[in-house]
Image: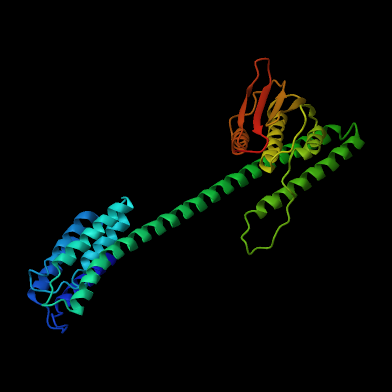
Length: 365
């Protein structure tokens, strides 16, 4: 519908331009004006499929105004201006190519423009417009093209940011559910076994279970709060965890019956926030997998510090099948990669499972 409207308006402008006489008076369009209008608008219909052909056809047709006894006014060459604009808009060419073609169109139209006797102000004005309008149409088309490309890049960047945020929230929810629910299940199992023989220890396990589920609810509220719209009520969340909270994390696993030892080598150094969070979550997920799949009651966490790298390892001697390929291993790999590091996980030759993450202290370059 819009394309038909463009052609219709261009046809009407051609006829209007063909009705202007040499003295500026307006009369009925000459027969040649209909010919120019038909030929120009026929070429104009190709402006999207063959923009260069449309530009050449409309320019040559507009230049026929002089042999046909019409003044080459800006109105009668309106299709050429539209074709110049569309060519600059839709073609992937260098700026100089668009400039050369626009200037060539202007030169052809100017040289074909008739001069009535001595050069009058009408002739001068008409020739100036013929020289200026095609380059202006080319510049306008190129500017609109750049504007559209800029907006498309912004939209793509926004969509990519949304996708990355969704992945980040999915990882947080997975870590929350896998870790906290696994701990709660282990603590409930301990309480069930000790209920008849050691009531006091059962109470301790139940208190720890209450604390674990409470922390899970708090973390869930904070994570779901990220999904709220800007106009919703704010939800206060805890700061992102890091290795500073590692003792608290290990105590939670110990309360669930997993003996965890920590070995650190090299002087500890400050970590970028993303790296600190990645290291914490990798240890958390790896120990959760030990609790769920390793069929063992012990695990070892290693932190090896160098001037520019932190190597995190989690090892167990379990006899279980190890974690199945799923979101846990995928999430750990994604966290390590997002922090600019490397990740590896697999069974050890001597038995058990090993998780290794090498993380640059300051994140990706």
